[in-house]
Length: 284
Image (cartoon, rainbow, N blue to C red; front, side, top):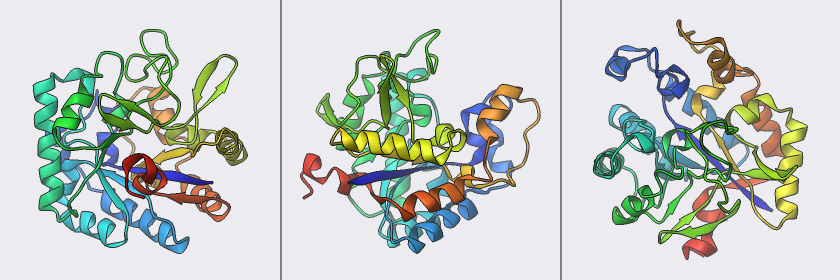
């Protein structure tokens, strides 16, 4: 079965692990690493004849338009990751509308092909309190969202307030007139567990990631894998003032991501969301 591979294109200093110690007003003064890290991913994908969906931050598109064109020219799908990497539930609907409009315009200025179909929220911050965002995305002409994690949200949950919609479908579903393509979870011990992306991909041994993908495929569904360019950068500068837990979550096994993805691609078939879910989107 063909699974979906997605890349959330952002700088390392925009990760939420650092939001309490790095002010967004200083972003332009920090050393840029997203171009080199993304090009590393593009080379790896080219080696394996694999295309993916790249959800690109508008802030990145404005500063590195050549990177956007390079991604598009390689045949990858371009989606939106918003503009300023703000968590959705911290915005009003009007603020979120401004952010997504600005993000889509940045992608157009950078030369992205017409027809951006999809969006992924920073930090997967689509939760029970921010489902109104789907109406805003639809109003801006988007066709799908890939921000929802079907895990229990709220205080004391596995992931905390930031993300999670309890009771949501683990698989492709229609919500508020959009298709929702959730990142992958497996059902075990009466609850859904996130797998196959980000810190889970770096922390879990590869055999366990493969087993999770096989389990999802055995349910007749494609898996949705996600990664970030900074996860391929073991030389990422250390940021002082970050808690030991946040530092561990962000930096664990950065030196293993590239090798693990290479081995995963050797034995599996992956593609962009708009192709893996072509039937749902009417693109077949």
